[in-house]
Length: 456
Image (tube, rainbow, N blue to C red; front, side, top):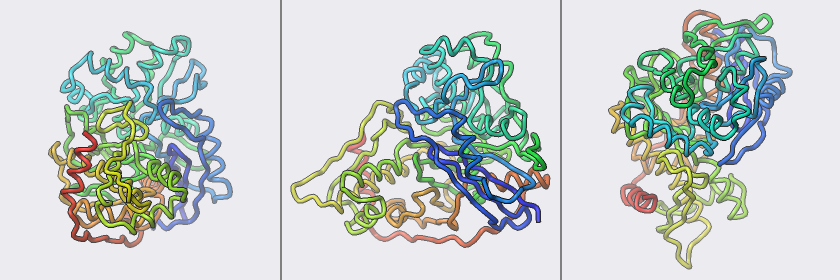
């Protein structure tokens, strides 16, 4: 029985799955934590990802193919000996916010959107390169190669430093529409830099890029691109993933160019496109409020369901660690509508509603960018296990919410890609039944309007 290993190297941990390459049946799984990070400085040393991968896959059976899905945007800086120069700056590091603004002064937002599908935000790799050039000149002087987290792990496994168009599309210097690096954009950071000629090669979606022992290594991709593979996202479908961050994305057969900066015009892992909106604050907001209430996340979930929709007028704007969409890296969270009779249940409910309202604003941004969002609405990530998130999302969206079969969807998507590299074609797996949550009648427009007024 041929087996494949899919790796999800996220902000918080590494999760791995081993699946049957023919049927997709789950054979084994493992996980290991990463060092915790908190914006504005959010960094991890790549060695920690490798150690977590080794720990997570310990004891699992040998496999025939491996593929890695990694957290997007992170900057891994290497010297001339391919040694890591400094800890990687992660997607949710906001120290490069001034650099994002500076880069937007070099080219207008329409020009950026047309060049690489996205307008620079603090999350993107190009802004972190600008930060490194500005703040750490000694490290910059040693820079010989630049790659992303999944690129680095794929290189450690297979021996070649490659990327894929999905993850490359989140750098701020790759054009998904043209399938080329836009090295002219890197010229804003430094002209004629030697390392620009050594950017990772962009592999094709099902290419074998190396070998790890007896296993072939697939090209890997970004975490959101892998999640789309793992749930079988189709054009018209929209995925809302609630984890450390919140992401709303859809598969499209045409690229997007959103000069507002809300929609990132990413590529997917198959040759199509994955327009995406990301919010910085999701489950960490729930954890923070649960701590204030003196309960764990599970109890906070139950409290939220004990309050009525609208939370008695309490409104939480969840910009606890700044925000990416809207672009407010220095923002803080606010709680409005408190009265002397406020209850723990209302505060808990308002926190879930605040996170969901932000994600629905993201969904509206996709529709405004002419992305088809009329298909299924799928809920992913840790939030998919939360009855409160399921209920609040269905009610405030006014739509049925499909919750795919439980699992690590990013790791599953990496397994799909590994199987494609092994077989030379995308597998057609049936991975369990989805649950559908139907909306109930609530005053969703009034709740969302109250959130918008508090947020803006």
